[in-house]
Length: 88
Image (tube, rainbow, N blue to C red; front, top):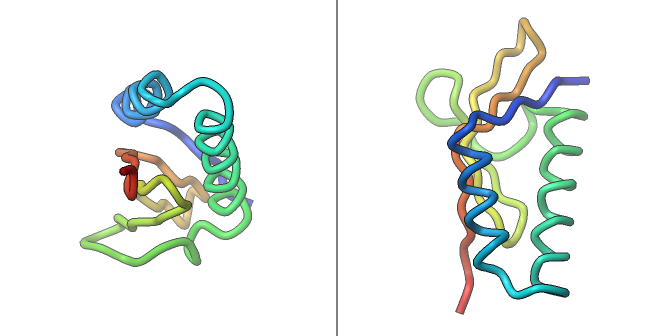
């Protein structure tokens, strides 16, 4: 198990995405994606997404993309940025 920490800027990204989404089904999809990305990170953070420079990784849970830093020794994934993709 890994801990999941959100940097303030990633929380701001999420808030902006959520507020811009239509109430109802669109927000439900975003909420489900956030719950799923946190579940994946908690269960097996090193297996999520693709590696980038250093300890950074990039992951996708439609309709969200996110960058996180992985501290394997500390067993923590730190979400640094979040964005929405594929929106018409």
